[in-house]
Length: 598
Image 1 (spheres, rainbow, N blue to C red):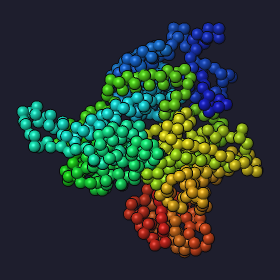
Image 2: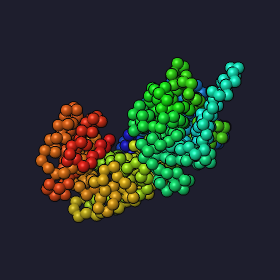
Image 3: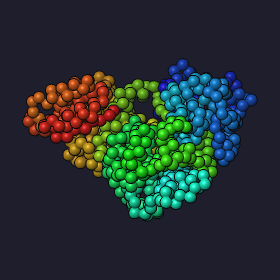
């Protein structure tokens, strides 16, 4: 990321692009949020100036956008609507553009940013997912990326309900049968929805709207979302349950979870085996959350009676796909957001975000890294990593079904409040808490907004220490209140899930879990074990990991007193197999353990 000489992480910076005289600037200036290196500039308050022939920025719209959005853009910018561009054509055009708007069909690759010659300042994704935009390259080239995450919520929920009802009553199959000249009333007997249990997997905006509509159809609705507040669910008559309870008790599953490493192929052979025989599945979220080959096997075995799918791992899917051709599967070509109203809403939302960014505003829907002054970033770099990893650890220690609503971050420092700006650290804790279980990309720009949107209150507390203020921080502590934990020892004496860390020799370390003092580097992954403190435990666990070719990087034991309870923290470079973890759990002296993915 380019460095900035700004006094504030959220300041907007500008760079020169013209030799126009100062007297001609007033009507030819517009601001762009781009981070630039100003160490070789005499004046950090410089501007991007357009030539006299181009008094407005240029926005390239590379895929079809609703007219309302186009009209909004045209009031501010020169708009070039060029659809179906090849990658080469896009790279050629982009050097003449200040902003680019795409949907899901255009790949905004590193080559696009490099071809822009530094002019491209904003990429707008008209929709939610940003898989088609190279975020790393965007950040490196000082380009802000924004999306439109809210406008298609109702449309996606309605499509989910449409697929639910069509599947239950065999509408698609019966329609095809009648059109082929048949009249098979007995073959297409459906099932009723009234009194059936629907498990909504992912209780965000779309999942919540699906739940509301399903309740109106007389269904009993439960939901699983490790991050959703229980009171929000209870307000509409929905019970939050664990993942295993949701999939094992549901008659219908409706998927609304993001595609993350944790949710990729989460519906697989192992989890299909836990489901009720005859379960029915709807997916209007992301194709990759289902192992499609495993779904075919579950359909053939009768575990899954029917599936209705709007999204697929590869889109469009192969014509000879066994899943697509299966007689008990209803499919649509990613139509979740395809209503006239949703298309117009998305167009307006993305146009407003792009115009705001071009005017120097930092949008709440920004999805890539923030602009941070070089000196601040350099000093805080190891603490930034520590803050994010403590957030990741803390949220993984929360038991499923517990809604995270109250988080406290405590900074211990010898510096006064005016000498320690914690906004970036708070943003990174938020990033660690939210990103592992969400498709949202959290940064300094959108961290507070994202937390508030999810009903999470993040408070900060500072403990002023005596000593030299040379180091910005002594420690960071993250506490999550009013939740149950997957690892009971992580609950502090005051009742919160608590983790604490320090930076030692530039490396983040975990130094406290609950009431137990530990010392383990936050590199790779961590296994936490609560055990009876007795000789041979380190060797026993180490031997199991060694036999599985899992390298142990650090190991630390914190105990209450000799021969009493102790917590062992083990840093590992690889992911241990399920069998290795099972063997650790079966050691008689091990009372509980948890594997944490960093």
